Image 1: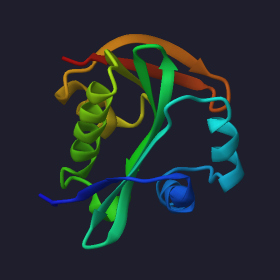
Image 2: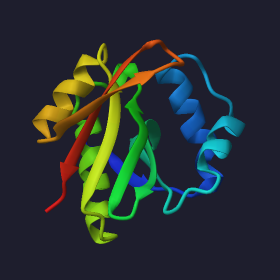
Image 3: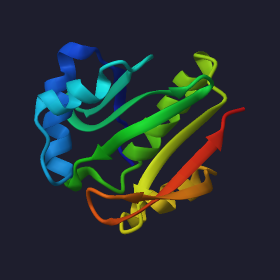
Image 4: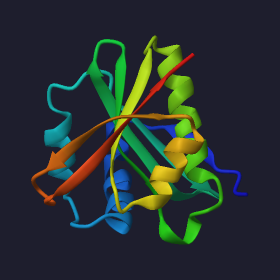
Length: 148
């Protein structure tokens, strides 16, 4: 099990997050697409997971509505998966959200991302809905966890 250091990072570290995103997801996104998504968003949280000073994972999210925090994207680079880093990232998000008075955390996941579905269930998230993703022409599973 990796002992990742999870750091809250600021806007100046968005290029690191974009680089990690592009190592994990397709299609690639440029830096401006992240900046556009954050426009008008409140309480943006960006985390980077590092193992031996190497960035290996990330989380980005923002307030969806009062008391609900939205996990927009997070991931771990392929050669560092199955080491508990995604769980460490999510535990850090849960802790931060509680400290900032959020009652629940929500995220969406494509059905084919089985490891993410398993992680959500292991972390006691509930399935609260399904949404059609017109960009990818497939369903997203919507998960939510009430934070205690």
